[in-house]
Image 1: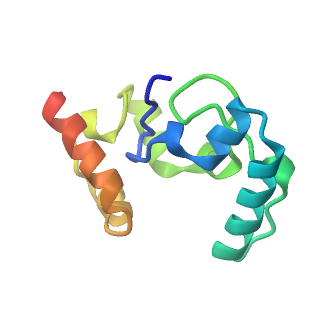
Image 2: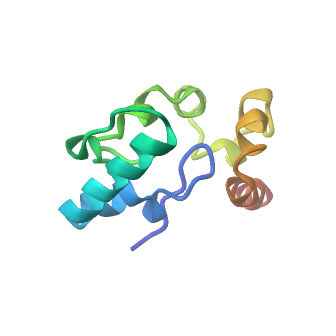
Length: 113
């Protein structure tokens, strides 16, 4: 499976929502919904755990459809934020403070630009 890197640097192909979708894994869907509901103090239903990846055609997890980094990346026509000429901008820097693994991915993408 080819690695899908989201606009924000998270690796979609490692995300449990993506994995539950491509493997049609109902147990993973339920576990992810329960975990994320607790983590994010939200009511996420197993039927909402579906996504084909941030940068690919097809269904997206709800949060991904409204992600400001994804919306910006699409508008700029870049593969991901690391490939953007404005990287790192204020939007992505705020997010990356909490997700150092995503920063490492985007830094690598930026070097490959």
